[in-house]
Every structure is written in structure tokens, then in C-alpha cells.
Length: 172
Image (cartoon, rainbow, N blue to C red):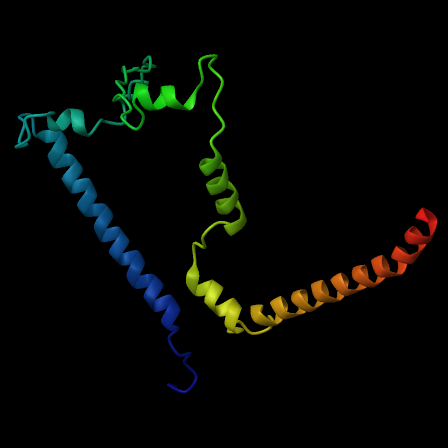
């Protein structure tokens, strides 16, 4: 008759064991809850709140939080020491208009032409060497762009040289 019996399902066995464990924990929770309601004196070592205030009973409803006004604090800023009054006076003329600063203009133009510095130099290195599969190396792209530019310049020079005789005939 042992052959006709079904084998035990391991999932249902595990579910049954977990249900038994849950029931044991519920019994333990009820026991601890009854001990908590029976005790009248504070047994907590904390002097901040009594245990009855820390765990509200289901009959008590927690108080709604009171809306408080935001607290704004005065921020005291440190005086800027980057420019003194004499340095600021040198930048402006007597009418209050900013003076023309040729070296600063040169630096701004140079920084603009340089472009921003890279935030990820390893990625730039991968792109330049062709380390990323599926993308052409940056040096190849630069060479193509350079060749296009040279071809465009040659075409423009040929067109200008072709137009030059027409302008010279009309001025004679």
C-alpha cells in the first residue's frame, strides 16, 4: 500500500511549518502584550518618555501634528576680499563705465577657443584610440574633417582665381 500513497509536497510542508511558527509568535506577542498592560510602574531606564507614552494603545488616537511657522535665520555673509576698493576703482573710469581691458579680453577669447576641459579623460582616451567598439576612432574623424576642409579651401581658391580675370577685364 505504500506504493499508492502520494509523496509529500515539500512546498506544502514548508508552508505548514511556517504557519506553525507564525502561530507560536502570535501566542508570544499576546503573552507579552498582556504583561505590558498588567505592569503599572515604569520599568524603562530612559528618562525621556515613559513606556506608556512610547507605545500608544489602540484606543488612543495619536495627536495630529501642529503646523508650525518656518524659522528664518539671519545669514551673515563674510566680506569679499577678492577685490578691494582700489582694485575695483581701477576697473572703472570716472563716469562709472568699465574700462577696456585688453589682456582680459585676450584671455577670455583664448579660453573660449580652448573649450571646456574634459570631466572624463579615460572616455576621451577610449574615443581617441578607437577603444569603443562600433565607433570610429577620433583621429580618423579628425583626418576626414581636415581633408574636407582642405578640399573646400582648394575649391574656393580655384573659384576665386576663375573669377579674377572677369573682374580685371571689367576694370580696364
